[in-house]
Length: 428
Image (cartoon, rainbow, N blue to C red; front, side, top):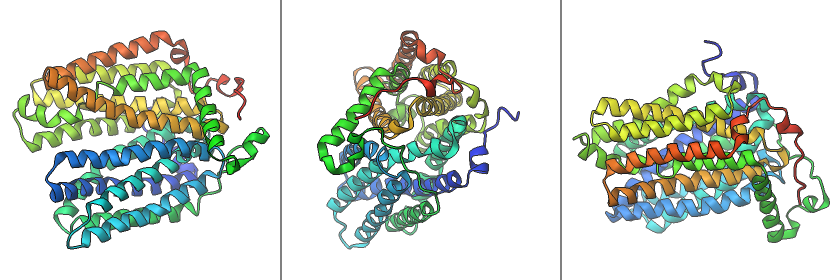
């Protein structure tokens, strides 16, 4: 059992990781409460569901830009300092939302602007946090740290929106924003107590020039990351199998339709459909101790579990059975997320972790959005049920294709020494 249950060693033995983890969890809870508050406030002000979608877009586009720039910054500057200077301003952004919500006539443009700034700052600091984890816990604890981070995300996804809904019904949306501001302030304060996390020594004069080369140097640095990804078969395979798991297999947008048409239920059933994958993911996190000894085969199996489970969910007319399939899908997603992240960080040199992490996060942002759009399009052409079944089958086929085409993925392991001794491309 000791090898099965979640490994808490990174939290138990590493003070800096413990501080970073607790600060991240608190800030994430506030962010998810704010996402609910923004959706409610925009809908109350406009009565338009499309406006809610535009707010999401207003966050997504600056997020992608921030991630690409943030990856370069994370490989050039102290990663703790970068997290600090990108999280502290979010306190002011959330505070501006709170003040706006207290106005007799809240301004919609403030919500859009604050949402865009939130995405930009989150993107600028996100790669630094991912790149900092191997330096804090060591490569031998990457799977354990990944499982802990994924578990905190799922826990926040369960708790944050629920708390947000209660607060909106009680003190109001302004209180949600104020708590979010407090969460970012606490996270920023916690970062002061984390040790400095400088990037590795720059290998050549071009890197040593820092930001003075301007935009050209930023693009050159991003190109370095892209060249590394293109030349590293394992990293390409990890990106592709992640896309296989997301595109065409994101059924969340169809939950209200499925609850009505397939299960004959109302909002209560919709809530159960949303909660089931998160519950399965928490079970997966609680039993993730074995992932430290796993590798490519386990990752492939987890993605196949995700696809097969979603196929079973789409084919089920019995609600309890459908919830079981969704829970299994959440378990598979948690394990695949843990192993994808650990293998990516394990196989990437420290001098490129910021840029590769940024490319990873961009892909992780775009793929679910494409997945929801693709499933919605399929549902329009066929039916919601057929769209989910088709998406699950496509996921299975795509995962098997990637596994067959990339032997490096099948051979991948978190204990392979070649991940550190392999010759790396020169940076510019």
